[in-house]
Image 1 (cartoon, rainbow, N blue to C red):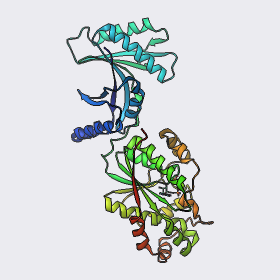
Image 2 (spheres, protein in one colour):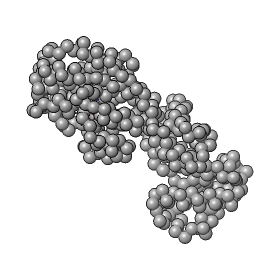
Image 3 (cartoon, rainbow, N blue to C red):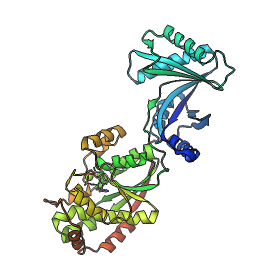
Length: 394
Ligand code: ATP
Ligand code: MG
């Protein structure tokens, strides 16, 4: 009787020495979370993590969800069959065909690799590989054996049953969420900040998001966009807390009372102050932004230094050295790009200076900020903030 399962390969968590059991437990937990609703179990057997118990028509979704879990470097759909050569050969042919279809190959080279945990099984590993390889060649005329650099390796493992699968499919990699502290991403509706959030989450950081909106200048569409972006990120990160901050009064005051060439940098510093107040309250250890050096006037090194000056904790800018095209490639890959390019006002595009200063100095910026009721505005922004928890779309 064939049973379907998904084998999960994990990467860097190997490196963690003594912490290994902890990292593995977290990885299993994250897999379980990402697989919510799929009615399956995440199990571990002799160092292997695998998922089983799902219904056959859910397999594609289960594979996708496993591949989108940080810490996983590869996934292989697998068959668990009876320990007979007939059953193994049949499964091997099916898995090879499936792997070829997945990679769009009309023909390919392959080899069979076998392993016995159950040493009572006959023949031995080499015997299994030879026999199954021969049966594959009999059944398919578009494949050839290449033992050195095969395009696809068919793996057979003899344990409590026979496990048959082909080369692993690529997964997101990184580290399980929760292994690298907590960070708050400043999430606009743009292309960059969702990619920044993804990049830090990939390193194991638990992500919270904060979005600034300026009603009535920005509307429901902008908020919807940010919620949709967060929902997409939740496919990788699990449920995400999203803080929605009303920023209108702040922006109006800045516009009225500060030099226009400094609007953007002051606005950025005010956003950061609000984020820091909430970070302190909630124990978020770092802030994350989608800035990339030199991309726009507010992202010159001078502007970034001026913005950083308000922060008492690290501000991560994982995209700082990337070109826009590189960022867009990632945005497409993770599925945020199409949402990001939907039209919708951002609060930063409402009050834009005609000639923004590219070299603001801290002294001048601080002097201008004296004109603002900083403490009151920060406090009110935090108090009137709304927080929603966003889960993946089911
Ligand atoms: P993005 O594509 O992420 O919007 P951007 O290239 O448009 O970035 P800016 O508008 O200069 O760049 O914003 C720089 C960073 O400031 C953003 O990446 C984001 O982290 C933060 N930010 C900007 N606007 C908002 C907002 N409305 N809410 C939350 N964070 C924001
Ligand atoms: Mg933007």
